[in-house]
Amino acid sequence: MTQKPLLSRMIDTGSIGDAGIIEHLEATEAERADLAARFKLVSVDSLSADLDVRRSAAGLIVIDGVLRAEVVHTCVVSLEPAPQRIDEPFHLTLVPAGSKEAPPEPKPGAEILVDPEADQPEVVAGPAIDLGGIVIEHFSLALDPYPRAPGAELPAELAVGADAPDPSPFAALAALKGRTS
Image (tube, rainbow, N blue to C red):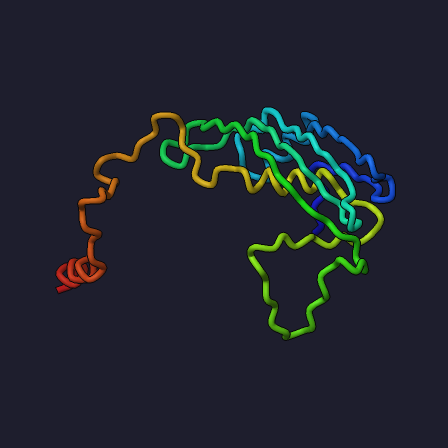
C-alpha cells in the first residue's frame, strides 16, 4: 500500500533560474493532522519552512532552508503532553540523474566507499522535486526521540544513578534459580 505524500509541494527543476526561487511552505490544518498521526504526535500546532532554491555554477540544485514547527509529543516518563519547538536550518544539494556531477551507480555487490567529509549530492530523477517531502524529511529528523514534559522525572526506585553499579544478569538468574529449588 502506497502512502499519500504528507506535504506535497512540487517544483519544476527547469523553473530554477540563475536568480533562484524563494519558497514559503505552510502546512494546512489537515496536513498537520496527518503529520501528527503519521509521527504519533499529540498534535502539530504549526509547521512552516522558508526555502532558498538555486542552481550552483556546476548546475547542482542547492536548497538552504529553515524549518519551524511547534509540536506536542507524549512524554516518555509521565505520558503527559510534552511540547517541542523546532527552529532548524538545513542545507541540501541535489543533482539531476545522468548529470556528470552525479555519483556513479554502484555495481551490484561492489563495495561503496563514502567520504564523511564530502557533501554528496542526492540524485533527482525526473523533471520535478517535492519541496514538501524535503521539509518532512528534515521535520522527522528534528523530532525529539525521547520527549520529556517539563519537570518529568523517573521515580527514585527506577532511576539508576551513576554511583550505583548495574545489577549483574547472573544475579537475576541466581534469584530465579532460588525460586525453582
